[in-house]
Amino acid sequence: MGHRAGRDPRLTTHLALAARALGARRMYLHPPDPALAARIAAVGRSWGEGFEIVGVEDWKSVIRSYGGLVVHLTMYGLPLDRVLPRIRRSPDVLLVVGGAKVPPDLYRLSDLNVAVGHQPHSEVAAVAVVLDRLGGIPPASRRSRARQAIVPRARGKKIVRRRGR
Image (tube, rainbow, N blue to C red):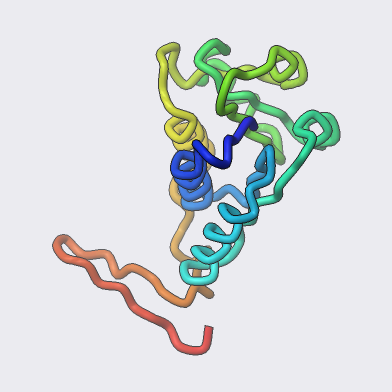
């Protein structure tokens, strides 16, 4: 929440790419940024679908209507290791990170305020650490319908392009 379209496109793009790569299915973006959403959709067309960006005007309504556990990632929250078992038990988790100054309402509306570390760090790092701790790197089979895929190698790069996808 609090994305500034003119100032934050690179950071928000990295946030979306990291979340997508680590298994997230959706990103609610406040306020909406159709150009950023289109860039991430293009990544999905090449590298595999299964992630969407939904622009939202009212972030509070998303949090209030969410049916699962709402976890606000902040350096001021409870230690991740302490609350990770509770997060793992929830079938649906909404991770929330803020861009600019986070309004106090977010702390109140969240089910958990969680710190990856009690030091300044980026939103990308926080989301990546939490998603990795929750599920690890998704298997390549999750993106089996992608138009292209990386062939793992010790050195060099190899990308295979799949036909008809």
